[in-house]
Amino acid sequence: MPILWHPSWEAPPDIWEWLHDSCFKLPKTDYVLILVILVVIASLGFMEGISTGLVIAVVLFVVNSGRVHHLSNENFGTMEKNEPELAFILYKHMTQILSERLRKTNNIIQDLI
Image 1 (cartoon, rainbow, N blue to C red):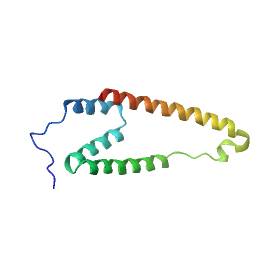
Image 2: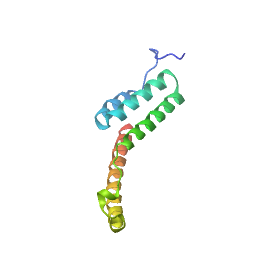
Image 3: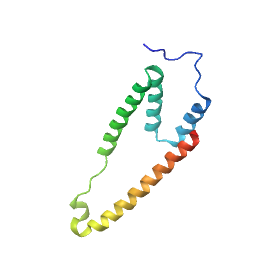
Image 4: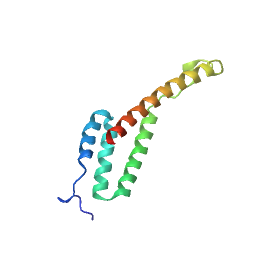
């Protein structure tokens, strides 16, 4: 069994600042996922930590995507008539959401550098 922590090991000081700052910038589930990954890396190893994080992230994605309401003809009337307009609206909202997430991710990465 690997050693969980040894007094002679020191984490880079930047990681503590980054963890503190990201607590306020990230959603709580993402922050807890990062903490779990770091604990598993420290206790079991790098690949185990990354694998654990990947599995948890996939489970969170499946759970969160299950909460999304799917589009149906009942909500939009005749789909053939509204399809181009609906596609444009969905594309516009999707690009706004993705650009906002990319901007947040970029800010977090810039804080690390």
